[in-house]
Image 1 (tube, rainbow, N blue to C red):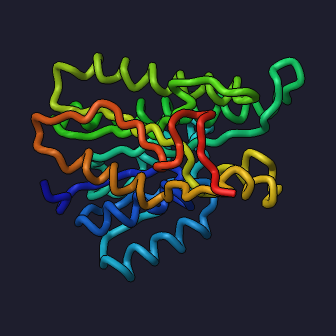
Image 2: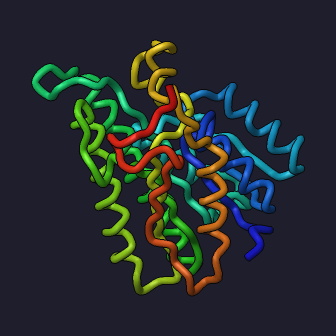
Length: 256
């Protein structure tokens, strides 16, 4: 189904999967609301959306961890942009890779506040309008970490398990509506994810993807476009997507 005339809100739209998804949805005819913390980066993405696809866009420089800011920004959108019918809950991060008894509590709070509470804040603000209008897609970006737990991943994995549970719960809550709820759970995707996790240590981040061809943000974006363009009676509940050289969170084949 065409995405012409649809309005999509993408969180974490400044880079990686979020940026790629904004461009992919714009390519298919959607107008895009770009939400993220870095205003200058949002403007750059918006200009690229306009230049490449002549699509309409608007930037919301907001931190999803701040409930009142989220509510004010979304409810303050111009009338045309109020009718959001695609929500991509992409904002999320990992911080650190420590054992729980050696962990940094500030890292824990950052992950919990972004990955769980931020997703809830945006969903609670947007979904009532979808229900009222009788149409909409919610796509939560989870992770293989929402299905498995790996060494040092404890709190991050817990947040992504929560995303999986919230996605399933929301699907149950909306089963008597036309709203579709999906999750896309990637394995290794080369974005800024590992740079953030390792707090700017670029060499350590590169080693995560060394010796294999990881997924790209565009690979995930194409999957999202497929999900939201299905006929109204088709709901893609969950997609786990790996690079070919990955079989689970810890089983990866690397070329020497």
